[in-house]
Length: 228
Length: 236
Image (tube, rainbow over all chains, first blue to last red):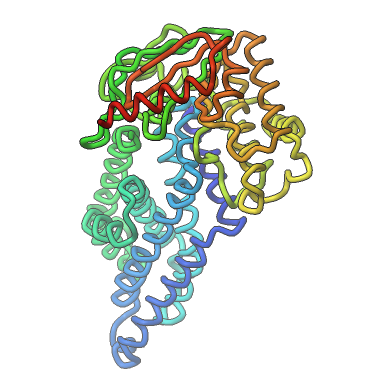
């Protein structure tokens, strides 16, 4: 069986677990929405009327996404700890990197579903008309979400291996994800302002390189990481 | 056939396995006994490729189970350990179909249904794992280990939680597996039952092979007394 086929099966299984009663998306949604509303209340009406949406939304949105996605990364691995299910995956006759790729794909789907709710809500709260800029904004969200999930899934596996909780995941993910978060802020701001993404080409390329390097490193290091 | 030579494994200062060598030939069932903490489960996990030995090597059908060959060779192994290696939120059928698909079994759904029938739990196909009793979960764990019809079985206390009828069915299934040329390493604390089934026994004490011999004619009580004594001696 090919590594991609195995990754697809693992991703489908993770999403089925989520549908069957996994609570990752509900927790992620609650945390992300709470963060957005907390920002809205603390910024206050005057600041929100003074600052343009392209200044307000990127930091709020990516802060909410970064913290909420931590829950998703942790939950995805928590299912593998129950009944030692991860050993079941490791016994499959496929390259074990397929486990990483499958869990990355499932995490990405969850984050994208979360964004489908969170971005319009942020648009309404902070007064941005998202329809004219939907195309470039979607591209920015896809690229940066992938980078965030690539790093988060790998670090989630590391935290799971070490038997530690969300606090360690946060301590590890946020510094590692700094390049992707900076890039996400710049590119989301450009998209929201209706500026061409060519203006932020450097940041888009940086995010792409970050995602590619993290994915390649994770694929190489994943099997040693799982070893007992 | 599965063989191991010079297997060493430590967890920090604890030496779990100390130069273990064994061979389970095709058409053979070997029972692995030993007191708690002797290293039996660690050895089973090393043989399954779930735990990497610090030294020594594992060969499956004569091939070294390392590097690129390891993934291919895993298709010949079926392992059941202390955990069910299944998912709480998936149904019995979904769990089996998922692992069947992951092992490249054609028509995984049909295979899952056939196994549920074979293990006497077709009525629980749609029930989530978390709603099943310990014994039913164990049946499913065994079905998962057999989902791809592996030639080599590594079963770590497989009868735990099974009722006498299910334990008897497992016994029959292992006999049939041997008759078809398959082999099995059976980790067990139930010496009388395991000796009835096995061709040979091996006793592991403090990470070393302490005693071995043919199962036929072996006295379970004397064997248990011997390895208990060996453990006490090692501790002293």
